[in-house]
Length: 409
View (cartoon, rainbow, N blue to C red):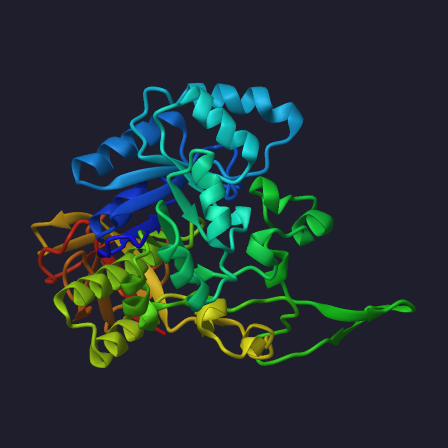
């Protein structure tokens, strides 16, 4: 039974309450978040119960859904603790809970019987029979394994009834469906418990047993040596094809990312989906959006397993490293009537005389040459703004409270 095709939901990550607000304002249809326990991005940030409740209320007032991620592996001694955590969610109006562990699925059904259950990509679902299996278990949505092909995706959507979700942007893992033990063996931090140290992103050298202080580069370019490092997924150019399949949701990876990353990727993919709806998803507009997407730090992009005919690109790490064309210099804090400009919290250094790039919800990016900077703390004039400063950019006028300020490197 083929699903009725409609524009897919844009699902965006948030690591804390502040970033959730950016995601909502930049056009997310839904936001997925993690609590302080039982999710695969648990080493910093995330939501306590109070913040989660506030985040749900904030999103719902603006027509945006919130899904809670509880997708870590649940060990036997943790079952009681997990059950007690679910008890705390009984009065929470969440729109769904994301799980990968079968015990987690069963306990959510038992303790929160009305809750919609989404199956994480960590469960590694590659075919329509597996989707139907989880449907029988009570799932309302499945996030497919990232390793499937586009042809398989179309067949799976065509032959299933429940919602299908796929990743379209963000970091890829060197291990199948993210099931990696490298971090645990090297640092003691278990990726399957949400504590990944991202050991695959580190620089590595070869050391001979009798020469412990002599390091040989395994394979090196100007950015370093990357043995395991993977590329970043980017399916922007294929978004029209993906929407045509009838998938229910397209998902951006990045629950460890900043408001800069979340705002920009949400803005780009919201714009892309709007173009698709308007029949304007042209090569020209795709090229424009790709250029904007490149303003955020990323590794070399790939269309991944879904569209690559030759998968060797995913194994070629010789020149894979971070590409950073712009610096994230600050976020909006307030507005100064006296100086007719925004007060911003500075993230990275910038100086007068530079042209800044301003991203705002529902608007095209704006450029502005900084002529004067005033300290918001003592009203003195500054030539250079440094991290943690609060400065006023004079004569810029009013900008959106969720503006992101950037500068070309």
